[in-house]
Length: 67
Image: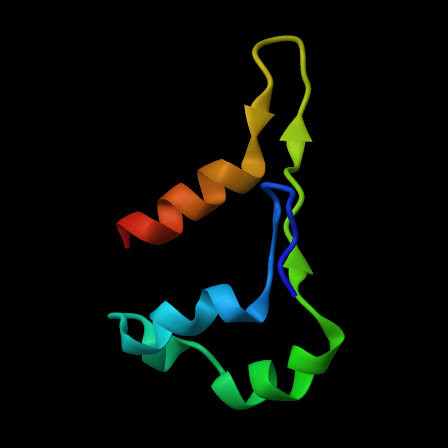
């Protein structure tokens, strides 16, 4: 499944991760069990306060990538 929206992606797009540095952190057997159901969709969670809005999702991914 490939989703045309920027927030969605199909299992096929995960294939390059099998060879990547974080491959061991992914439960590939679970992905294979869930693959028949399509892809996933990641929505942005935005905190709206009195100041500038904060995109919690992207900030979280950025922190994960820097670890």
